[in-house]
Length: 531
Image 1 (tube, helix red, strand yellow):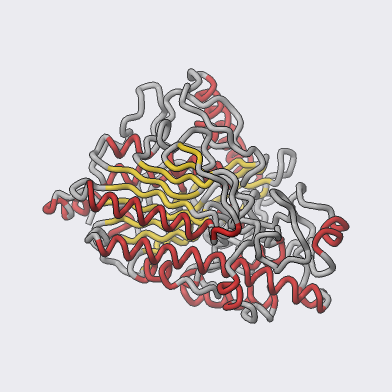
Image 2 (cartoon, rainbow, N blue to C red; image 1 turned 180 degrees about the vertical axis):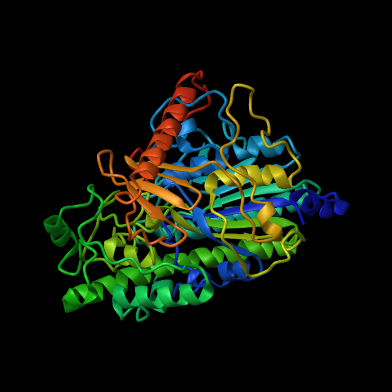
């Protein structure tokens, strides 16, 4: 069945599909059970078991740029509309709600934002709950409801960010069922979990207190074996890389001083840790797992609401993560009290490079790098009405820029949507052809550039470099997604050609953006350090 036949088969009801995009924050490729993990994610697993798992889904390696790509269908360097990508925002910048509202959709947002402009006024959401403060899950200082500031959270209120995001999502859907039931909808649901600080409800932490006693080395091996059996990967397990960590992390001596003797600054073998370090690290991973568990519970509430309003079968549900797990170790917001219970409101712990490496099994590196560990995302697409190949895998590479074109395609809209004539075509491709069968989706390239880390993928070959001056490395991802055998010395001509292609795209994006008039959308005051 080709794409035209597939879409035509869905037309008799004439009902446009609804869209629900769920975005996790700093969740590793292998954290969910359906991707080989050891964290309880029954609702995410349900979507995988009754939908499709894409094995080569990509983000941008960081929170802000990923949201930009997801909401615009353009690479972040083309629009500069997130809080981390420098540059002038072109006046042709158009967001998913603006495209979909032209097709009769009602549009809703609940969760993290990270875009320079207000969700309602500039991005076009009919209703939005924007949790702007990523420094506290228990007492955030900044949030908006339909553009209006909400009072700061208080510890005594029993507030927890993940639950609040779920609450508002359910309320928006209830309102839609009550007032706009005949209209299709788009709900963008970006959770802050499991982004640092590691904050979780104690009942969720207790559930995982003994689960990670074996440490990150054994956890990686176990995840790797499960992933191989599932058919998710066919590459070796990348080794630990203790010599690489974010250069903005606290210094090793400061980490010990601020967090105590249990903290570990590098991804070193588990058997080299002291008893105190092993105990502390197990607790941190338990909190990370608890954050994902609570997010999964909220996803379940949203799925139940879809069922209650008879929208479940015709809702295209996407679950992705905005980047790989984070090796960051820092303190923000209200600081860290080492005497407070780990994971509670007065603490500010981060996952760190040891467990981040495990969360990103089997790949190299972490969030902010554009090696596979930083950009590979669990990627699930679920649609009872339109996907019959339930529980299957899809090997075609895809990227967050593909989500807007996919929604437009399934909604019966033009691939350009309502983009102004001066705007470049969307950078992404519709993934609809992969719903019916495991097929390749042709594209010219996949491009990556974040924090001076660079990469381009064309076909199965990927060229990647660490930093602005780091040497280019060349890998054949069909055989080596763990990026262990650098082919650049053996195939220098191909490496040079791909490097030229990366620079060509970089120059084109900057030139096109700078040639445009700066947009005058209503602006926010983002936290430049967030993410």
